[in-house]
Amino acid sequence: MKSLTAKKPIGFIYTMNAPKEWADSAYGPMCSQVETSLASIYGCEVKSLKVYNTYQVNNYADYDMDYFDEESKRKYRDEHFEEDKKKAFDLGKNIL
Image (cartoon, rainbow, N blue to C red; front, side):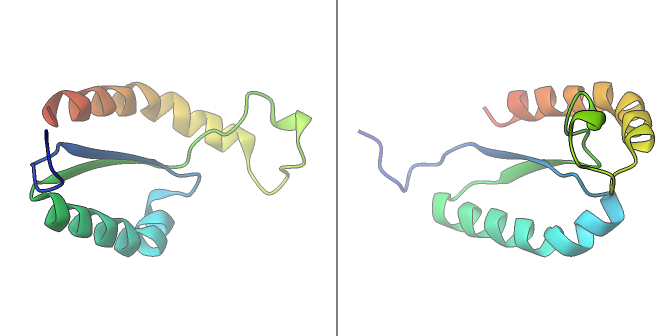
C-alpha cells in the first residue's frame, strides 16, 4: 500500500480566460504557492502549463458576454490552440 509520502507525479493545466500578462500578475503567485506546497508535501517536482485567453463558448451571441471581444478571442485560439494541445500532451507524458 502506498502512503502519502510516496512520490506522486503532479501536473496542472490552468486554463484562463485572461491574457497572459494579466493572468501572470493576478494568478501567478497563487499558482506558484499551490505548486510549491504540493511539491513539498509529495516530495516531487510539480509541472504546469498555463493556457491563456481561452475561448469560452462556441457562439458568443447566445450569451450576454459583450465585455469579451469574440473576434480577438477566436484569433488567439486559432493561433495558439494546436501548440497548447501539444504542450498539454507533452506535460502528461513527462509527469509519468
